[in-house]
Image 1: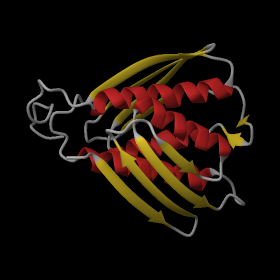
Image 2 (image 1 turned 90 degrees about the vertical axis):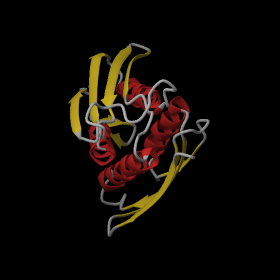
Image 3 (image 1 turned 60 degrees about the horizontal axis):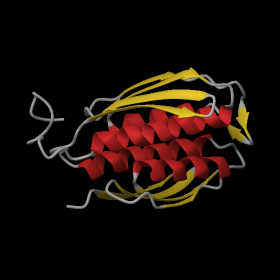
Amino acid sequence: MPRTHSIARNTKETDVKLELNLDGTGAANVSTGIGFFDHMLTLFAKHGLFDLTVDAKGDLEVDQHHTVEDVGICLGKAISEALGDKQGITRYGSVTLPMEETLVTSALDLSGRMWFVDHVEFPTEKIGNFDSQLVREFWQAVSANALMNLHLVLHHGTNSHHISEGVFKATARALRQAVTVDPRQTGVPSSKGTL
C-alpha cells in the first residue's frame, strides 16, 4: 500500500494544501511565499526521499508565523496519516549531521506520543528575511501533529543558515530511518502492541 496522504487546512490566516509520499524519490514542489522556508522544505524532501507538494498562502503582511506553523501542522498530520497503523516500521531514527562549521543531531521516535526538545540557538534573529525562531515553531508543530518525540541538539555552529539547514537535513534523514519498513519487524515495534 502506498504510504501517502493529502491534507488541506483553511483558516482566516492561511490556506494550506499539502501532499506527502513517504516512499518517494525526494521530489518537491513547494510554494509558501517564503523563499528560505521553501528552500528548507525542498531539502527536507530531498534528504528524506519524500515526495512533497506544498501550496500555502498566508497572511504574510502580518508576518511569517502563521504560514510556517500551519505548514508544520499539515506536515505532521500527513506523516501520522501516511504511517497508518505503523506495522513493520523501524520507529526510531537518529542522525548527527555536519553542515560546514555546524553539527546538529536530530533524534526521533514515532511513538504516538508527542514530546519536543529543542537545544538549538541561532546567533541571528533573521536568515535573510526569515525569522530564525520559526524553525523551532515549525518543528514543534510537526512533532505535535505527527505524535512523535523529536529532540534537536546543536553541538556547535556560527552561521544561522547552516544551522537551520542542518536541522532540516538531519530531521529528514532521521525520519527517513524511522519510517523505513524493517523486513524482520513483524507487527508494530512496541511491546504494548500498538503505537
